[in-house]
Length: 262
View 1 (cartoon, rainbow, N blue to C red):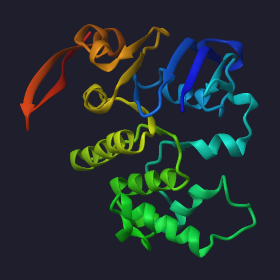
View 2: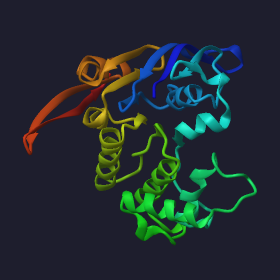
View 3: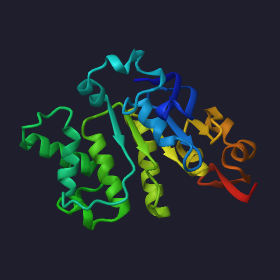
View 4: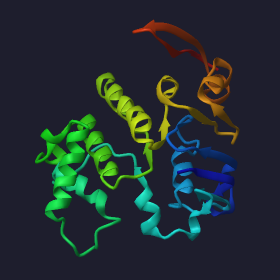
């Protein structure tokens, strides 16, 4: 399934343009990273792509069909969105949260069936978090919460998952777990992923394509290996950097090291 944007423009109250002339495509099973500093419009871009905000002009398409012409139920049956979440004050259990991922197929008045609960447990087991089944969300760690939200996104068997800064606030251990899971879903389940991130190294680790955006509405889009380089990092982040390359387990790993601001 392909999600694409053609000539997307967005502004609040028809004033300063936040996004201008956006064109991109996410192919089946591929991973797109969206990179940029705080306040450049990364979350706005995701919300426009998904129809949660209306483009001022331009359109988003799912398999060539304008998402304006796709029913809410049909769209969210194929697409899952994980917004920025840092904590939960509600006392939902992890299992209850995962079951909420079936909202596009369950009636608002219906209760989860035994089959639904088994599906939720199977989904949690698949990503190794079944032990969190009965834990309350306000009593688990940030990394555990992110994994629960990924299970919630997976339970409806989507073709595309959209992550808004999924690794922010997580330690190295949990970042690696979640990045590896996103890559695994792409390779083994042919799920496309779109990921907002502040970390060029994480984009290099798992992304096929990268869209870089700065505050002057300049954007750079292409294969990750082509567009993430010191010159473009300077253009987008206003940071001087170098690329360090190491070999581990017969794999070449690239790391972007920031040196100074400009």
